[in-house]
Length: 520
Image 1: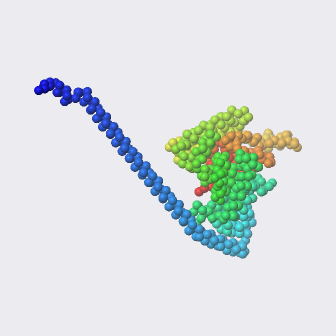
Image 2: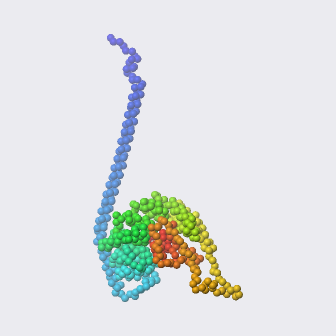
């Protein structure tokens, strides 16, 4: 028989060691953790796949919806053609009969165009439109620039009486656009009239069925409009490039493109340069969007800021909804700082020794008024309280008034010692060739470098110096650029934008002006 094993040996054979047990336990724990991580990862992948699937499903649904909407729109446009054409033909027939009736009626003419109310003005406008007398219409409008608000209200209704309003408008403004044909008679800038008439045409040629997405302009008229645009672009070289073209001409050209729907994608860079060069006009942000420059707006705004035109940049940011990217308050404060520096440089300029204080104060006043107006327009009072700005403006106004009173010298009347009667003129006054001017020397105005691309034209004839007497020079309460030119002299002063007719802020002698928008 075999020997009986020792109990201690049996224990070693049937029970593993403690270290082996720990290794096995650790291995099982590691496997459990690995399995959990793998399970979590699989669940995460499944969730991501579900989210991607849902997103893809939504995109497909959106695409299907957009495709359906596009097809419905095309179908609607197709079905609306017949109705729109019928409406247009009926309108042509109606206006043709009205024109014939007007021509046959023995209506008393009014060659001077004098009207005493809006109804009378509308009747005269309608008469020229019914008869398709484009030249008479143009002469009447350009002669009524003082009634610009009334014209803006009445011209669309008058143009609707035309048999072919689009062609009529092109003929009406052809005297000055795309090329000024007035020859030696050039003097008054009539860009304001061109823009006004082109804007007034838009509601007239809008499709009555589907709206602004289609304009009722015949193919021949649209081709003619394209030719006019190309002629204007070619004339840029003759004028010395974009830098030397007048801002009213730029505005007319861009409005012409928008009105007739002839914007070209390959010319977007040209449009961008033109808009930036005339950015101080309040209508430019809206025109920029209509020209398809929405994607270029951030770069355009940065360019304006770099040129010191922060106030113009604020208007652009609000037009395209980039206020978060370009906060307006820091821009306005930077604008004021630049204006203050410009005023200080004027004071330090030895060439302005006699007028430095007045010019510097005028510069700062213009900037303050512009910023206050901007704060009120965009409701920024909470972020930028205007009280201190208004106090500073009042202080400058008070200082100017006090200096003007101190400078005023009463008339020096010579009196007789015996009876108090007036003395005869001084000896110098009795000389044949003696002449003493009662006019002060004309001021030397300084234009801002940010608008040097549009210098004012040199007067063709000498202008008499300004005489303000005890009154302050005219100012524009709506000037919104510190680069505004000073008030015009009392004599003739052709050149853009000085002579731009006084509507919506133009024609008041201030180059960058905060005027009413054409767009209503």
